[in-house]
Image (cartoon, rainbow, N blue to C red):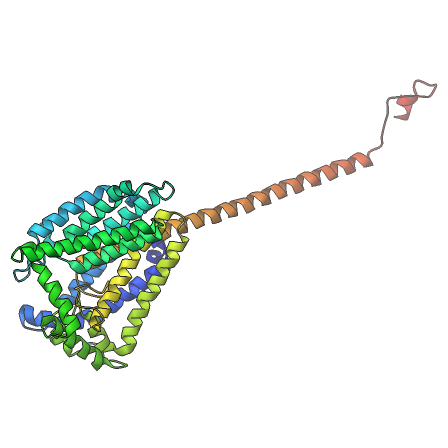
Length: 439
């Protein structure tokens, strides 16, 4: 175990927080999956869902381990190549993805030969954030005209968002907000950011107008759901989403301070998405306010560690990568918790590392692997610098030792020179043999 821990590079604090969140997730998932177990096979046995979640978590940590060993600057070039591939996947998902109850909730594609579903928008967001970080770090000193940056930066952003929007408005809004934040941190001109925000709002309104003109089109079938969710959130009109929110609030109220205890949740049997979108309500019901606040504090500490990692990064690309991949993870968690307590309308965002699911866990782990790779690079630089200092000290010691030995040898030779009598071949006497006789 100790050897395995020693092989883990990068920020150990981030490793610790991620491990804590993953370990904590097993009990809520095991408990909250009872609803799925009753629907699936009518027995209520959730052991299979626990094993499945364990497999997802183990694969996720393998992804973190493999990715964190790759130098993070490799992703700089990969993002430019991967972006067109992501567009193809998003388009395929939009056209051929899984459809739920006849509505265009096409967010997943079936992976061939494996039989698992994959949410392509999560991969698209990672690639897009790295691409934006690459562009901002490349042009930090060039000051390119807005027309050039619009073509190279914003057109790829809008293409990606346009392919996600018809099926997933909340993810589109989250990605757009994070891109705006990333450009602000990357010192992109504020006047251009304001123009882009206005353009984004205008494009969204244009999309809604087209949806109103063609209400029967499958590409706009989710627009009615968005409108009804916002309307129900503002007017408390009862519907399916309101039912979920009410059950979530009952679960949170039942938890009180210490909770009902692990596995003793009642509302898990009534919440349709109790193991994913509304798992935070089950956490509070079973572990009380203490458990809910603890989860919140863990995410905030992880956010604080991301800030430290970004500050320590020696390159602008590294700083922006940590911000672009780390902050959306925390904001997604905040959105999930805010939905559970009815601070926001229902969005469908999962709780990272705690909610059940395959692709969401794996993509979160992929992002964490890249972030840890950035911290590993800084750790390696620090180790190299420390090694240089050690070599410098050792070399100075060798030089001092050599100089001391040379000084000692010189002193000994001078002393021997002083002890020996001085002889001269010069003879000032009258007898020429005196020199020989004296010797």
